[in-house]
Image (cartoon, rainbow, N blue to C red):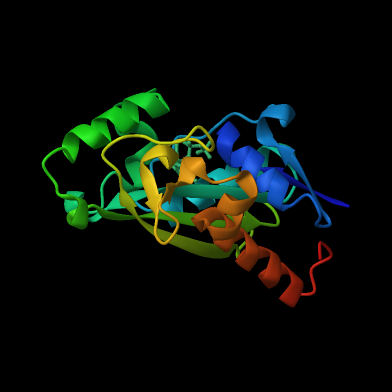
Amino acid sequence: MTKVVLATGNVGKLHELQTMLADSAIQVLPQNALGVHEIEENGASFTENALLKARNAARQTGLPAIADDSGLEVDALGGAPGVYSARYAGVGASDADNLAKLLQELRSISADKRTARFRCIIAYVNQADDPGPLICEGLWEGHILDTPRGRNGFGYDPVFLVPGLNRSSAELTPLEKNRLSHRGQALRKLVQQLANMGSRFC
Ligand code: ITT
């Protein structure tokens, strides 16, 4: 098994990524367990932030690193909250604070105009100054509900209506979410790319 540090402090993401990699040859170690100090996410894009986080974790541990930068893009809000999804209601905001702000911003927007997507960029680096990082993207299209539904998942899951299922992302089982989600799509692409490169992980 090859050890890779998972550069996230978000428990929801961590569980999803660990579950999806459980049967792979990659042994993922959460950065918190290795004492990694988080870096400020001051990039202008998901890709910049994912790379910042992956390089930071690799630098502090000497291990290859995987980072996820993700968020919700709401069309009626011009793509907001986007890269600011985790701190939409302010630095240190809880998931509940962010959800409340989103529903407030959308209060006058009709159901048919509440289109949105989750976007996830996953970055992989072999070492901190890796000149050829792998970058994979996943998109999950949906609609924003006017009332939260369901108890699974994290973040904006309770208001993200999954097309065709008439269930929110928080009403899906973890397995169902991982099959469909932006994160699941991006991670499967990464594992495939590592395999194509003849990586020792696959
Ligand atoms: P790390 O940077 O430590 O990974 P973070 O929560 O700060 O944790 P991001 O900056 O990538 O991570 O922000 C992602 C936010 O987007 C997250 O906090 C949620 O609010 C939202 N989000 C991303 N993926 C989601 C998902 O699968 N379900 C619900 N909300 C999600």
